[in-house]
Length: 79
Image (tube, rainbow, N blue to C red):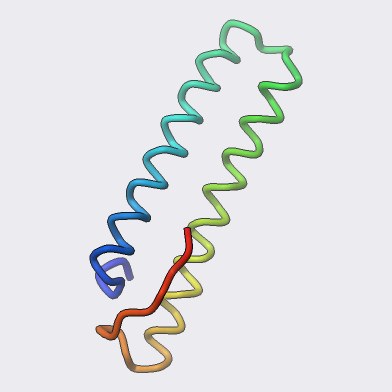
């Protein structure tokens, strides 16, 4: 599905996902040292929710592109 996305949107998506995954790694590292910290737990949950939201938006976009039969026509995608 990612191949259907315009190159600039795909690059933004990959960058956003990489940033979210780096944040999750850092939060997990902090949680390893402070496993009972509710703020870190909440932050990790929010980070995972943000990643899922980005992926859901991509899914909607690529599904719409496929349904329209315009998979190669660029559409705007906000990340």
